[in-house]
Amino acid sequence: MKIQTIEYYFREVILSMFRKRWMTFASIGTVAVSLFVLGVFLILVMNINKMAASLESQVQISVYINDNLPEQGRNEIERMTKDLKGVSKVEFVPREEALKKLQERLGDNKKILDALGESNPLPNAFLVTVNNPDDVKKTAAAISDLYGVDEVKYGQDVAANLFELTHLLRFFGLILMGLLLFATIFIISNTIRLTVFARRKEIAIMKYVGATDWFIRWPFILEGIGLGIIGGGVSALALQSFYSAMVAKIYESLAFFPMVEQYPFMHYVTIALIAAGILIGILGSTISLKRFMEV
Image 1 (cartoon, rainbow, N blue to C red):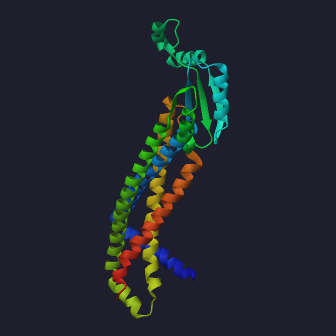
Image 2: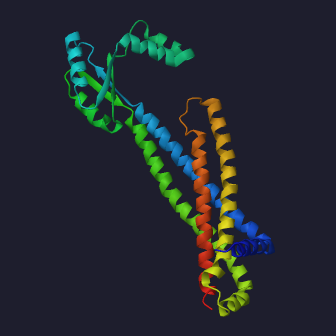
C-alpha cells in the first residue's frame, strides 16, 4: 500500500470525524459507557471467583467425637481419617483448646461464657483438611460413618452459594453485554452511515472511475476503529480509577479480603476493552457500508 494512499485514508478519517463531531462524541460516549459497564461486570465476577476459591481452599471438616471415647478409639479415628484418599492434614483439637479459641474470638464479649462456670460444653474434635475442595462432601460422609464420631460439619454451603451467585452474575452479565454491544454497534453504524450517505455521490463516481470496494471502504472502517479505540481507552481509564478506589475503600476495613491484584489484572482488562472497542468499530462500519456499496 502506497504512503499517499495511507495518508489519504487517515486524512479522510480525521475530516469525517471533525465534520460530524457531535455524532462522533455520541458514538465515543456510547462505546465508553457500554465498555465501562462490561468492565465492572468482569471485575465483579473475577473477584467473586477469587473469594469463592479462597474460601474453598480454607474449607475444613470439623469432626466432633464422643466425650466418653477412650484415647485408643480417638487414635483409631485419626489413623483411619488420615488413610482416606485426598486428606492432607488431620489436627486434634482438645475441648479445652477449643474453649480458649472461642474466648479469643469473642474478645470483649467473652463474659457471656461466664454463665457456664467451670463446665465446658465443647467436645473434642479433629480438624480435617483435604487437597481438593470438591472431595469435602464425600470425605465428610466417610468420616461420619466411623465409630465414635458424633457429628461432622463443614462450610461447603458458603462456597456453593458464592458459586451460584457467580453463575447468576455471569448469566445476567452476558445478557447485558449482548444488549450493550448491540446498542453500541447500532450507534456507530448509524454514525458512519451518515458519512456514507453524505458522500454517496462521491462513492458512486469513485466506483465508476475504477476505485476498488476496499479502497472506498478503508476510510470508513478506520473511522469505526478510531471511534472504538478512543471509546475503549476512555472506559479503561475510568475503570482503572474505579477499581483503584474500590480496592482502597475495601482494604480500609477489610485488610485481608481476597481481591484480584490491581496489576497486571487491569492491564489485561485495558487490552480487552480496547480490543472490544476495535471489534465494535469494525462491525459497525461493516454493517453501515453493506447497503451503500451496492452502487
